[in-house]
Length: 135
Image (cartoon, rainbow, N blue to C red):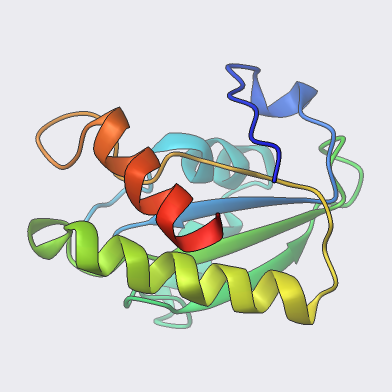
């Protein structure tokens, strides 16, 4: 497996699918999921207000980017409550993502480093769990 670390703007990433995470208890949605929400006129926020999307661990939504992004699809994955986010939750989420990407027959994807930053998780911790799950 080849892993590349990108620091591109979401509007410049070209791949088959973007995989983005969001927490059940963090509103408005932050990170790249927040950017996609803004680009798509609050689609995630609207679904959350209607209780159609909540952020439970493993919950997923597939969105067609409608040519608003160079990547045609976005897979939004719930990460559960932010306070209980840890290595085992991340591994569960990554296994879920891996299964969904296999079902979609995705060969190339870009993924946000979910939960990295702040007090939740460091880069090395994220990559150790990622490589153990995908590697």
